[in-house]
Image (cartoon, rainbow, N blue to C red; front, side, top):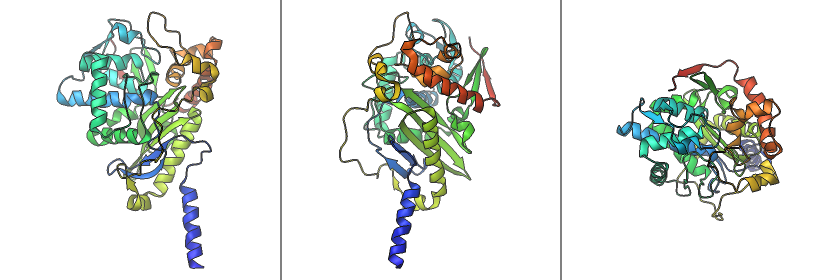
Length: 371
């Protein structure tokens, strides 16, 4: 009888510790200082990182600041290549500039694709040279199933990662650069006359939330790396491939809440990021979710490349970041001006804008200058 009760208790515990998602993508919850894994689901499945790429862009820039290659007041000049990047962006004109300190804030809060290129060019001389540094850093951190092809996460087949690798990157950011962690807690920032708000709703809705970054393209679904601290205990959740900003927020919240509830036992008996068993059967290519996330038109649109003078937003964009920003596609949605080619992005935008208005009304603004 006692054995039966013990077995029933273990079964109930396992059920309660699992996330409440019917069709869930990869996910991982861990303690960043010792690397203990509290929960993992498909941690090594290849995935498009979307704007989670910018966590590595920030990491390499932090390294350059530490090495003295650049300084906070280093001027970032908007090049032709930077100006050609698709939204979300700061919309600087070629030749205009901001400081590196401002650029980092805009990179994380606005997820600005043009600023990512500006940072890359300031730190390494070119986007290509900076991408090489990103891949070197990934290998150094043990991100063995990650490869970067650009600095901002816009769609490219050679850009992929995994939940485990993103956890390694998040851990490195937290452990190696604690002096920069306030950057990820920023809810909004003012650049000139623009007030730029975060896309990370967990910073407002989840008690103790203190970072890090969201990301979305049609092929990746809605991704997030989210950190939270309670009673001196810090956890990080990686969630990939959710169907909407709302389901992403719910799943990340669920995973972190469960982690804090079981912190003591998981910290005693959990495995490490390196010790976590590797899946027996793994694909060599990332999942492509465009059909299910954005519809059939997105699958065709997502094969197109950006560049040139015209920058018509298509479903290939980092659409979540673009549509939530008041100066980007969200303004067009509000006026009913989004065309049929961006129908799916508009639907995402309408829900995201409403959520943003509700959660980000009373926030602290970090004011910065723009040149």
